[in-house]
Structures are given as C-alpha cells and as structure tokens.
Amino acid sequence: MRRFDYIRPASVPEAVAAGQHPGTAYLAAGTNLVDLMKGGVATPERVVDITRLPGLSAIERLPDGTTRVGALVRNSDLAHDPAFAKDYPMVAEALLAGASAQLRNAATVGGNLMQRTRCPYFTDAVSPCNKRAPGSGCAALGHATRIHAVQGWSAHCIATHPSDFCVPLAAFDAVVEIAGPDGDRAVPLTDFHRLPGDHPERETDLRPGELITALRLPPEAADFRAHARYLKVRDRTSYAFAVVSAAAALTLEGGRIGRARLALGGLALKPWRVAEAEAALAGQAPSPEAYAKAADAALAGAEPTGAANAFKIELARRVAVRALTQAAAGTPARIPALPASPFGIV
Amino acid sequence: MTIPLRLTLNGQPREIALDDPRVTLLDLLRERLGLTGAKKGCDRGQCGACTVLVDGRRINACLTLAASLDGAEILTIEGLAEGDRLHPVQAAFIAHDGFQCGFCTPGQIMSAVGLIREGQAGTDPERIREGMSGNLCRCGAYAGILEAVQDAAGRATEQREDAA
Image 1 (tube, rainbow over the protein chains, first blue to last red):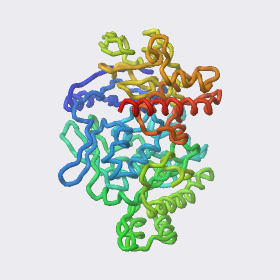
Image 2: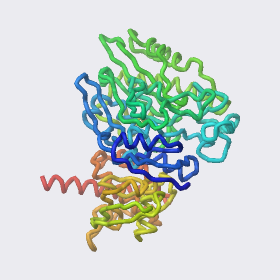
Image 3: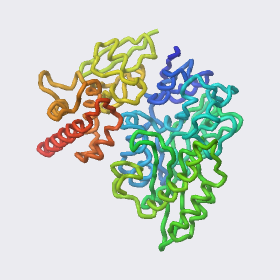
C-alpha cells in the first residue's frame, strides 16, 4: 500500500477543508477503499478519516415525512432499523442482499454510494482502464465481459455499478446531501453517478473536497411499503454481486396499479430507471402482460458489449417481470431468510 | 509522526502509538500485539478468517485501518473464554465438530458470537447459513458449524428467557 498522510478532522467543515487537497480520499469504514489501496488501485496521498465526525450517524424522520439518513449510518443498522424497514422494506432487503454480515456492519450509507466498480480489469491494477488510468484504454472491451454493461456504456468503459442499495434508492427518488467548499447542496441519486461517456474517470457528480453528509428519501417512498420488492440474481445465493437485479414497487388502488417504480441493477454504471417503464404500468391491471411491457421499456436500447453478456438483456427482462410480480403479491411480513433471492420462499 | 490510539482490547485498556497509518486492525493484533487468533486468510475481506468484534459488532479486521479505531472496544478470540471456561460458542464448536483444520475457526466463532448478538437469525438454519456467509471454510465443516451455531443460539435464547 502506498504511503499516505492520515488526517482525522473533528468536524465536517474541517474535513471538507482537508479534502480539497488533490489526491485525497475520505475514509469511512474503508471496506472498499482499503481493499483498493491494498491492491494498488486506489493510491491516495492523503486519507481524511471521517469515521468519528459528529452529526452524520442519525436516522431521522423530518416533519414533512422525509427520511434523512446520515452518511455514516452503517448498512446493517439502517436495514434493521424497525421504522425504516417498515416503511422502506425494499431498501432494507437490498441492503441485506449485499456483501456479508461483517461488511454490512462496517460499511456506511455514504460509502455504499462511493463504492467502485468490480470490473476485474479495473481492480487488477495493471490492465488498461480508462477509469483507473484515463486514456489507457479499456481492456474489458473484447475480453471477458460476462458481468459488464448492456445499458449506457461507451467505447471507453463498459463497467457496471455494483451497489444493491442504490437500485431501490434510485427508484424512490433519493437525494444525496453534500457538503463542500462552496457550501451545501443536494443532488438526486439518479444524477449522482455518471455514465462513462468520454470520461469514465469521472464517476460521480462530486467536486473536489465535497463530502456526502446524508441521504434523503422523499415522503412518497413510504407509499409503496405494502408492494415493494428487491430481486437479485447472482452467481451464488449469498455474498456475491448482482449479475442483474431489480427494485419494483407499486401502489394498488381498486385492483389497478396506481403508481409504479422500477429500477434495474447490474446493467450500467448507475441504477437503470426508465420513466416509460413506470408509465406503462400506471393505471393497468397487474398482469404478466403489463409487467412484460414495462420490462421491455426498461430494456429499450440495451446493447451487449459482446456475445458474453447478451444473456443479461433477457435475464433483466425476466428479473424485472418477476420483481413486479412479487411486488404485486405484497411485501412479506419479514424479509426472507435469503434476502432478494429468486430461490427463497417468498 | 505517530498516531496515538486508545483501545479497550479484550477488556483491557491499551494505549498504542501507531507508527504507520497503513496498519490494519488485523496487522495491529497479529504483528504488534501478539494476538494471532484472528487469521489472515485472504486479507481482502472475502474469507472472514479475521473476524473480530468492534464495539460489539463483527467486522473484517483486515479491511479496517487501526488508526480509525481510536476509543473502540475490541474483542478477539483470545478474550472470549473466561479463564479455563470456554465461551458457549467455543464449547458448541467442539461439541458439534465445527472445524477440521481450524484455520477459519477463530473467525467462525467470532462471527457466530456476533450473529447471536445481532438477534436476527434465531435458530433458523437458513438464516444462520445466510448470516454466516461471510466466513469461508475450505475444509467444508459447514454442517458442524451450522449445528454449533444453532446449539449456541438456542442456549443464548434460553438464558435470556431464564433471566427475564
């Protein structure tokens, strides 16, 4: 691991001041950052330890019904918070479908948003990778790309974003609160992660020195609590990243779908949410045909990067249909023993 | 420049002057404090052999920078037994043959202690398997591990009920 200067600020303003130095990384739990530093993928000159910053660890309900989650809330604490899990069962299920219990106990809400792609050509620290070494090329294109993107990729990068948590957050219009040198601001999660385009090294909307301080879920997100599911298909039943996942949430009114939310994971460098897919469901009777239309809309324009990942498009369609079917059937009283698994008893 | 750290390690207060911020909790325990119970398997957070409790929660010591733990309470496998009296999870691993070579066992046991404290799995085998998926056992002693955790979890529940 490359040497770095270690700074432990006492407040958010102190952290932001320290974070403006080029080559700075903020350290929360470090479950992804420390791993990447060991592998020589992340080589910060300065590490600003935010783990003990005050005021970033609360789960609050604001007067207007917004839920505000501090950036340092641990994934497991959020998933097991009774009020949070009751109102946002799909988010809790996605959290529990990710990583292992040890990692969830450490990993933070802000860190989850900031985790890097698991594209093996990025994490091997040596292959050409435009994310890790801008301008060096993309070693993934034309090679082993089974897990790679089928939406939103470019000739410069075909990686996917690995988060489970971010998929339901995108479906629910979550907002990221950010502190920075020029003051505080808020960004919709769907605009927070960037598609690769010509600059895959620019992964998020964050500017130098900016720090995620909280995440907000708008009041409407709780309207879906009775019909919301996260479904994750992966290469083993536990402790694996999604090949494809879906967050599906509905309101049912008089036997018809009122509002619908659908976001897909594993397809792109950000959770994939398509307005047309949700519009296709509104006002419809819940049916396999309606779900299939929505899934088709969500996959519109999908292109594999090669023969190896072409299966993901049809798989994503089926996962979307299954997740919508499960959502319509109703949120289970308790998160299943195997969260988000297609093999669990629903 | 050293980083001063105050830890409670297996119940004992410790003051440590850390000479390098790159030191992980696992390396601090094993290389500097002589506590070699927590094992370095993958060193990348994938195998769980380094599992310890920090402030009562199981985590991967290999992915945690020691510098970030000032003020934390750490429990390792060395601090689990009370003298010669094994912790119930340790005893259950022996009773149910929850290991073969033993390399992953400290991590398995600390993970099981954490799992039982979390109180989410009870004695449900599927929930225990899922909750223990962060601990790999290359000998494949999973059947015995599951029985051990079920047994210890059941006893912990009985104890709580007796106390109530």
